[in-house]
Image 1 (cartoon, helix red, strand yellow):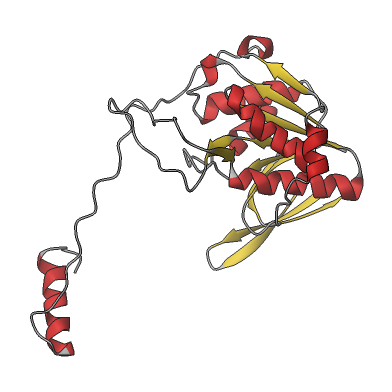
Image 2 (spheres, rainbow, N blue to C red):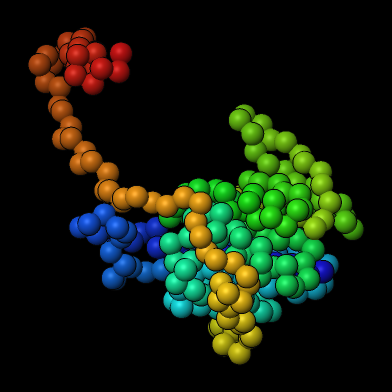
Length: 257
């Protein structure tokens, strides 16, 4: 089976994010970059599927040269080869331009199933997987927490409010992975050493016949407003008095009741 896993390099969730003074982006100096956590679930499921049914796993990513580290991480986990689409035209790509580049790269290789993270933790759009499936003309199931494959039949479980639903489709298809699908493995030392020798095909937008033109652009970045200081209610030491004062503040100042 030919399996593809799409990955994105994002700032570490513990990184201190600072917006540039002109609002054009974030200060990247000193940031630790990691594989998008939801993409880890996709890579792990791809590897589990390969181990169960045979085949190989190809990692595909769009990003600058530093994204090679994330591709190599996935290779160290057990994937066989990678494709990195590194082109300045795609550095500020929106979900559509990113999916278009991924689709163009994937069209050039055999694939039976494609995994993506359900969203990236930086832009939080949750659109790339769905657009990728549309561009390839294949089915998609998003936010998957359980996956079963029997021949060409695919059965995926996804959460809905207060319950879950099972969706049946066939491969080839796109699956977007979310928390609960699996527990991603750590790359072993032998895996890390082997990953250094595994092939990674470098691509430019022109190689794939895409322009990188975005359908949408970020006009400005702005940090969230400073949180106002908390208030300690001490007008009355009795529980009743404190409750009355709290209700008054919620109604007159916070205006939430």
